[in-house]
Length: 274
Image (cartoon, rainbow, N blue to C red):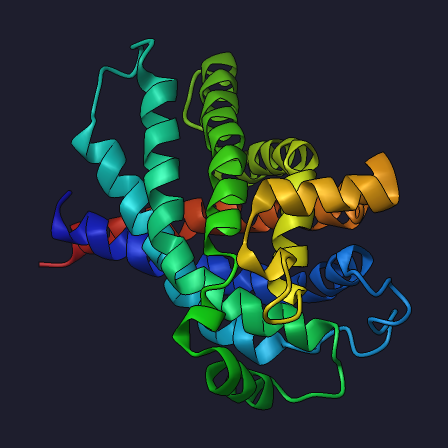
């Protein structure tokens, strides 16, 4: 991938990530509290829905930038004919690689953010300091495996579906989709992917919020899912599914639309520059 394309992916991904995380933060807080083991009301209810926003604000740009740099690079590296039956596989591999890299940044930010969301009276920096003091660096990466196990299936559904919907729409209208059309495709793809991966999101939340030293804190996803199923049944596994779908559908609309628009704009600027 050439330098203008690399820089465009980095900046466009970062701008898109910040836009989504800050606009939709209250929905994410509500979803986290619905999934928390102490229950929605004890976790804060509708009070202080911007608790933890500094962690999200700091982590969102590098997290999204890392994803899209990796995603675009792997797509370029595995380039195939646009009509090839291997194209969806290329998108799946690119999205999976992007998630593994992005989670190195996302998980510490997510751990601090989610603990702040269920402890609205505690300051973000204090939570960060306590994690480092009590659990060390590994405390910040608690839930890394469960986050990757959530994000890869999510991306395996979302990104091939997004690319396929864009290709279908482009074919129907006989020209490349506009940014708003890309955003609509992103909303549908994101909402569907969010619904089917909600149980993995519940497991990730329980692992990140568990008390240090508890069995759940060990990071075993199947054990966390079994515990939720045993105590709350199917409803527990899909706790927060509607705010998650709403946030990710809106997020897909904003994130992928902003990404496409910013990416195209930066490439155009790069072509015009001497």
